[in-house]
Length: 239
Image 1 (cartoon, rainbow, N blue to C red):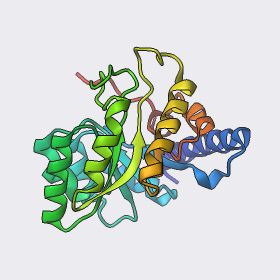
Image 2: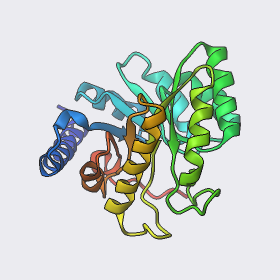
Image 3: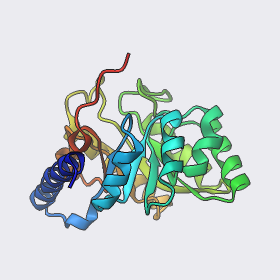
């Protein structure tokens, strides 16, 4: 086993222990929570090792990194998640490899994704990114729609060809009433998910929690956690 494979295997095992323990504490089954490994800034060789170690869900947040990496790893049995803020000029590329986009937060983006998904003959799962730091009708510091905008955007996604309304995503906010209150933030997201599922029962994904707060996300009921640093290591500073 190479040094890098050993390192990733050990890190994955620690993350797996954390998720399993969080599930026990929450009275949940381990299979209720899917681990998505965020591979941003790391090479395709790491993605290949992760696949060998049994990882099936990987995420990227920048198309310029993701597109070549996804192409290089196209032979692997992976589901690709796009989790970063998405500009409409990148939609054509992202639609080519992303199975799910977690950062849908405005009508113009929905329209662009639908057009490209239809053109490419693909179905793209869409999660509405919820900004718990946004004022009513506004957007969050790191993207996302305010809770009062979920219903309208959800209806738009659900009615758009080539798209599937998959659920909701959030990032624990750094400002506003939920700053420093990760569990409360994720519990709020679960309440919003319950509301969404009344109209769209299949939109049952709840993407929340990262390396530092995955336990709180599992406790709240998240179905997917997005873990990068705890698996791949601390990223070198950019710039």
